[in-house]
Length: 203
Ligand code: HEM
Image 1 (spheres, rainbow, N blue to C red):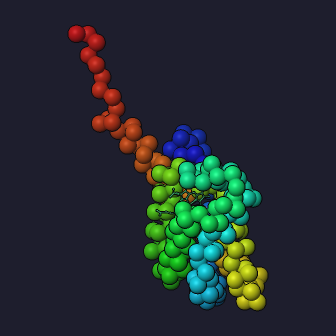
Image 2 (spheres, rainbow, N blue to C red; image 1 turned 90 degrees about the vertical axis):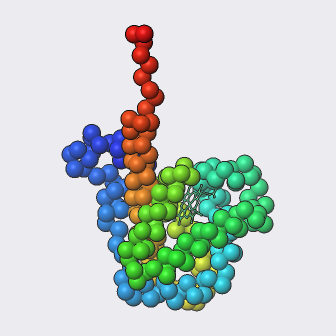
Image 3 (tube, helix red, strand yellow; image 1 turned 45 degrees about the vertical axis):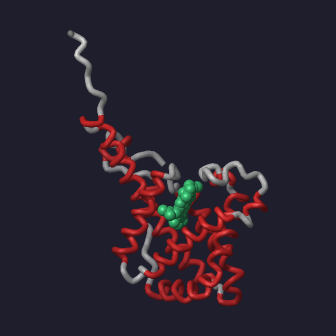
């Protein structure tokens, strides 16, 4: 994902949107019944959040090793089985789960959920981890796979659809936050006070 500012003279000038931006604009908010399903299932999932976080990331790194390379702490780990007992991965998984917990808690306050997800996207700019559509889709898919055995017979295709809708909505906002931060940093770098001072070569 590039910075929106770099395409100001091209797509944005002509009012065009990239396929990714089109997809994000079409992302829908979970319906009332989906919100209830997500909340109910979270009450069960939350008892196992440390386990879900680890399973989710080990699977993500197994199926998509390119995602592992973005993580400074894990990029050099060859034996993924070792990661299952890694304190660092457990801590990272818990941070992601805590974000999901906050998102679920804000489902009835769309503006607060939006602010949370946009901020997370900004953070990913500083982690040098652009939340591209494909990678974030893998994260959502691995979450779904990790929680399915925990929910056992409670798992339904409707519930899967509800969680996927939430992930799509949140990750679209993360991309918006990433783009905003990218533009902000570009503007900061271009602002006169950050330009190197001109030397007076005539002297
Ligand atoms: C559904 C999508 C995602 C969610 C909900 C998510 C969530 C999070 C959260 C909550 C943090 C910790 C933030 C903090 O404590 O300030 C984080 C950090 C991070 N995320 Fe994501 N993330 C997602 C996708 C991705 C993707 C696709 C990548 C790259 C492939 C990625 C790479 C990172 C990295 C490198 C960090 C910093 C890790 C560190 O502490 O060193 N994330 N993410």
